[in-house]
Amino acid sequence: MTVIEQLNERRETARLGGGQKRIDAQHAKGKLTARERLELLLDPDSFEEFDMFVKHRSTDFGMDKSHIPGDGVVTGWGTINGRKTFVFAQDFTVYGGSLSETHAKKINKVQRMAMQQGAPIIGLSDSGGARIQEGVAALAGYTDVFQNNIRASGVVPQISVIMGPSAGGAVYSPALTDFVFMVRDTSYMFLTGPDVLKTVTNEIVTAEELGGAKTHTTKSSVADGAYDNDMEALAEIRRLFDFLPLNNRAGAPRRPVFDKHDRIEPSLDTLVPDNPNLPYDMKELVHKIADEGDFFEIQRDFAKNILCGFIRVEGQTVGVVANQPMVLAGCLDSDASRKAARFVRFCDCFEIPIVTLVDVPGFLPGVSQEHNGVIKNGAKLLYAYGEATVPRITVITRKAYGGAYCVMSPKHLGADINYAWPSAQIAVMGAKGATEILFRKDLDDADKTAEHIADYEEKFLSPFRAAELGYIDEVIKPQSTRKRISRGLALLSDKATKNPWKKHGNLPL
Ligand code: HXC
Image 1: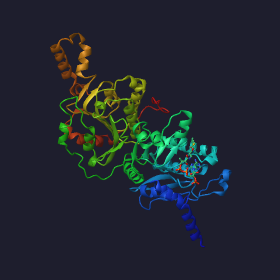
Image 2: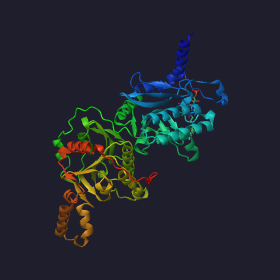
Image 3: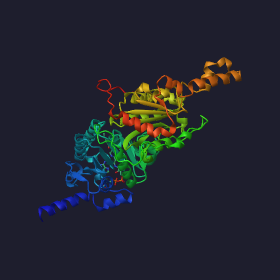
Image 4: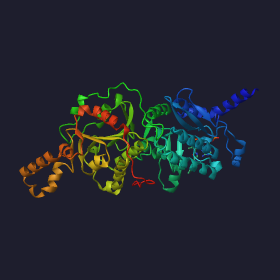
């Protein structure tokens, strides 16, 4: 056999992972193999594999007699629509994708290269956790992966896709990355599994209920999105990748666009209903601002009273944060504040401009809100906006009341351009509430009360008092919102603002 034939044979063996039987078992569960997944994630023929022949070094529990090249994880780099990315995909057919010392070292290598080369890293998880035969060496390996996740945070985008089990401390690598996506019915994440719960806390729960995609996208907010199968998940990760910068110095990507930057949308002039208590769908505005109506939403199923996600304007990626009047009247609460704060910080560390669309009647009142720390959670969003130095444009479409006005990217928190629609109402509170407090003694007199309400409405329930004070730069026609935003972003493209030097701030975590 020639050396080339030997190489081919070794490669073929490695590519077979844990063997055809285990590959068939993987397919029978509706899952693809690690290599099949990478083929779908990356551009055709772009994958360059590293460390295909790495083997574990453990000798206990008969492991000295079992060596499968690659050691349960496929690593390397490739391109997505021509832009480079590093990848690792755990191979469940090899020791259940469990993480050994050498498996971790392979991941560490691509993590380090991603940071050096300034390219994102995408991890596809499908693993039984720490390699049980290795004990503490596997724990050390995990911790090395965590440390690299932390170092890479804010340097290159990190994306995790959970495509099988992810249990125990293994969940912490994904949790340290920027985005976590799951596949419905075949993936789960939990620290402590159903069997242990049954013994320790007497709780009886399935793996799906405890840590499936539905749980993590609607209740815990650990995951940013979920997809029906491997193929859909990988196609959507490619779509997200196109929105992301390669690293913290590359700037938001720009791609060719065929949508007019000054497109006028007359239908927006009637988006806000005449009755200020009626809801409308803020997503309509997001779609109408975006190039070709394309919106990649993050955490679509969690804290639906706020929308977060990426659009493009004139081809450039922009982060959008928007109150959603369709849910809880658009009120801010603990969950919405945490969700938006994390998104704002992602945009800020990767130099993605932020557009904020405001229609918020205030913070959601309630004992549970207070007891669940709405003060600290609201402060997270305040902090995130106040610290963000990327170009920022705010548009108030309707209500901007009370503390929520202060939080939703006003000028006073460093926003660059603040617009209001003529329907905007910028006040400490609604006119009825204000009258009930200021003129309590007149409440029995319906005429006087109506007069006070009208007076308050005239003074504050418009954008003009704020515009007189210079807090609003211009009152704009709703139909021209996209044009105003695109011109504003062009103006702000050279913005250079720095916060005072510090090691790091103390975000109210
Ligand atoms: C070594 C493992 C393994 C592990 C699975 N395998 N998990 N080998 N270490 N952690 C092997 C199995 O022996 C089996 O080998 C193959 O992978 C497939 O596993 P099955 O059990 O047959 O598959 P399935 O029925 O689909 O069940 C998958 C599973 C189960 C639910 C993940 O394997 C499981 O419960 N594994 C153990 C999970 C666990 O407790 N891990 C440690 C968590 S603690 P063969 O040769 O038969 O194909 C942890 C701490 C990390 O991770 C801390 C970091 C700080």
